Image (cartoon, rainbow over all chains, first blue to last red; front, side, top):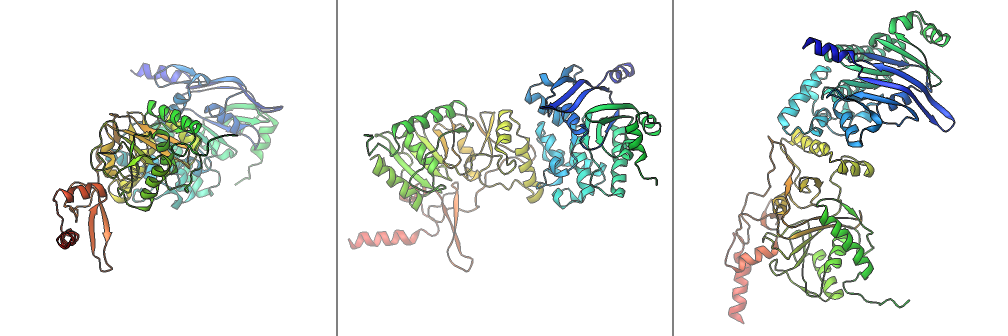
Length: 265
Length: 298
């Protein structure tokens, strides 16, 4: 049994091969390849316009690549190319085995319906049909992301920015996904709220053995959360490696510039 | 240009063919909203332009038409649509549910159970059950295509979270033939069970939204609910004040400004039929006394 689990962890969860995307003559993303293993946190860092969001959209099957492939190992153990998935399968994957945390919570949440329904939506989408159990699970998840369960019936538009972001995380994790995409999850939050959110994400990732691909321009976020870092510039991956290695001993001049532009505390 | 100035049942034959094709497609895919090229009718949107077009397309010279509005045969909307077809098609009209072959309705299903060879035509304001949950039409169509109906339960969840029970009282979403989720038009949820396995053909026309959908005879129609909060039809807990019916859908009528009210059947034909058969409610004595006096005087 342990061997079986070890074998599972030995196989990559998601593989990107020579991914590229061009808009006419503009190449947004060029020749990106990597493998992501279960439980691994990969940070994609780079400045605005470096192609990190385009890459994330291709990896999550929302954007068709101009070249290359993304393959994903499904729950039943078969690795499949994302482009061969039908729309129904892809959407099913998106609301069960994957999560997507947007920078702007309004994009990932239904702002007009209660927090409980926001968390419960994915459960209802996969056929849960018992109000009591849906509510219990939702309330359990609100507790896990440190939202007062007394506010379960409040709409997220009454929540603060940090609470919205935590709610978005709960909404994504309720179906126990194996892979979560995060697009600048701490953007627009003040530093103390950021710190709390990062702490929460870190503990959830460890607890649930989540694989995470996180796009950020904030090297501190990458340092706190990720095991590996990919640095992008002009649509290319210019440097990749273990987080501490890349951030403490950057090789490329651009990475050196990035690291040195953090203000000393 | 020698198009006739008059055509049977107002619409020209090409238009009727187009609508009939949409109806046939709707019957073939129960609960699916078929787009059609809705015409401008001589009445404002919201007054039943969809229902009128469907009725015009299916009406034949031997049909007997009944039109109800909120269950009543004698409201402005019902009378003007009935007159419209009496004038443009010369068909016989009736208020008796049993005698009608085509019944156009707004917001009610008659209490008298329908039989085969009858067609019930609903006027529909908003055909899309997911509309207020998901504003994008492209997205709701995709959700129907992939049968992604989790969102519909989100609405019911919200009801229970807010009010402790499913508070949706009309336009209560149903699943047709175990496939499409459908808006039964703003009928009270009291009427939902009547749609299930109904011997009559049910057609739905939305003129402004340009959609036609249908429930063929003897089709399964299930109201959505939760296991621990099952669907329950709602009815005021009172007998009809005119015919003492205990099982009909009631309208609440405010009678003065001191809190006085009476409950009467919303289906006027059903109520009148019961009164004629000798049923009396708590407030029905007066009009019958007058009628009795008229008789003795005359």
